[in-house]
Image (cartoon, rainbow, N blue to C red):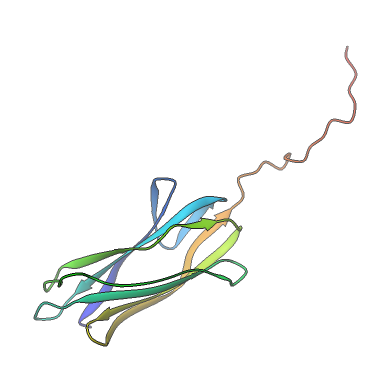
Length: 134
């Protein structure tokens, strides 16, 4: 394979977790970072495309970019998407494709981006109807 996705990270609340990430708190802002490495014998321009879906299957981010310059053999290029709200509990998915210019598909990842969990206490809707002062 002339290139691979070497690392995937989810950034949230100034913290980072490797993808697939687990136990991500609800209602944080997420940001995906992806690194791709060129294993060609010559310099190549790398590009990336990804799509993130929430647990309901709705697309929350579609991102694509080509690097400005060229990646030397054995080096990696980082791609950083936009911010999106992790506003649903459950499993979020991502589909990533790494490309070399002009049209070589190098590597793909399709799977879990993260699992978002509720941080609310089970007593969030707890109401005291009455009490007796002793």
